[in-house]
Image (cartoon, rainbow, N blue to C red; front, side):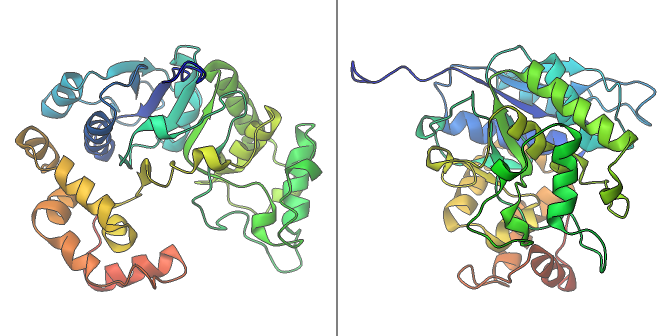
Length: 333
């Protein structure tokens, strides 16, 4: 760092870990993170929902190899209470976990994320929150003769006293989904997890309890977090990510969703990172217990999926990719 360069702002990373699929994804995420960010100055929190009447089964990562491996990679386990959500809406974890995070700048990552580069490549302004643009037009689903995008989104902005017009991307035409602020909740950040989380929870519970009439025909599950996230980000003066964040969903992180999708559509470099991170025995002996990882990485099913697709000419929609993989009997989740 030269004398005229400001010191990089320290921040924490938050992921949600729990029993089942997420504990194995967390192992891959943390292992890949440590490989590329050995000098990271913040903390890496694995936020863990605690057992309560909101959960049908205990959601905590059980004692055993996965928990021990995560602990050996210097994560900080962070217990939190599910006061509103739980088994009925596990995506609510990412909302409620923020109340337990130290009130310092944070970046939230879904566990189904692979780290492929250094966070030093990012330029994050934590005072201006943003989130992932790697998404499709999954919500709202416009009904014939029903309200359009502008009416639906406009009603939500109005409900919370937000300026709708300033959220629009005017490079896209009216009633085209990308004109309206819509994110994937696979990553997002802000300078205060307490403030961000409290507003996220407030908006989400209000929409659940008393949705605007324009949303009466719209499905809220599983989309609630992605419906509310743009409103929260806009309310804090944030918006679409700028060029300084291009490494997220780029050269620094890959939100792969499922390993069949990773092998189908991600770059050779991402596959190389995945397989290198999964090679050490201490990682392999843990994640091979999860069938999709065992089949995809260690038994060659990932290579079989990859051979089905041309990365330069992928199907336009993710569902089309899923359908091809399922037809070949190679879908594991």
